[in-house]
Image (tube, rainbow, N blue to C red; front, side, top):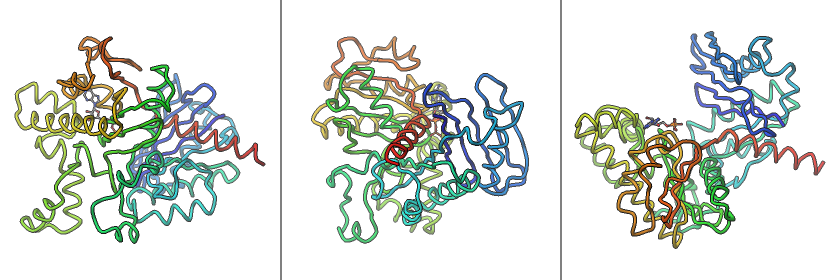
Length: 403
Ligand code: ADP
């Protein structure tokens, strides 16, 4: 099956056109600066040159029109007719408590997505606009929604409840939701495959470390806890987000610095984390370069970043009553041997023993642990688009079978 995977943000659309039989992208690209006069479309068909088109793209409907046009173009295209797109898979950030798995988008699903806008005011509206735009251009093509939150929805109450009046959970749905679910699901499944063991017998800790970062405790194939919370702000230190913090700190800063709610939100989401602590960059490569040059603030940022991951490994091993594997993924998890080394230092007591040579030479899917390490330490590149495409294929096939 050929699935167009769309990830629609407020001013951008990332896409991949995936052949699910071969598990491979025939083309990928993105539209950036939607709504501006000089929007940019970059399109890269497999094994051919990347192209870049600049033009006025006022909204998501026009952006998808451009994407379809370039996919159909004689020189850079990958299809001859729109009907070659068997289905469209949409990444949707927040499914609230409604969705514990991927779904075929129906009118009822659209209503539920709209009901969840309050929970993700920045993410869900562009996701909805993307679905509406795709439906407009491809009215007869099945559209599926794959949620970042779905993998975590079945966490037990002890993991998702906050210590605030229960009524607030009932009234406003304030609870831990967790995000990056497609990535945690994908890499934990791959880990079981690599280890050649049944998924539902393993205790796996997954660390998705990109600009945003989160970890999950995956026990017997089920996420039982995760570091991100009501929003993607909680948990690990991230590129620009503060992660865990005493909630009083923000109230105190608002008073001291005279910040309003919006400014406080921006401070925690955009000016904190690696960039806030280092006073320089949110990019781990640049942090590591600065550390190598002896920059103390960058070293603090690096240490807080890795220490928190280490603490959560301990916490999740306790939560699961043991751990069989730790998986590193995302731009930092896959590429930073320094981060992996710092995280795994002095973890022998729990059975985590990193092989320094393997760690330095890591590539592809790889076991980085010493042969006698009780816990496997795995590098597994994530592929959220492939998960979306595979889920979409499964839903469409089930639909056809039941028709
Ligand atoms: P996003 O969350 O935006 O998808 P990515 O998963 O692409 O982000 O991760 C981006 C992060 O990965 C950046 O902090 C970047 O510095 C880091 N990164 C990429 N390559 C390396 C590398 N070789 N060494 C250290 N960090 C890296």
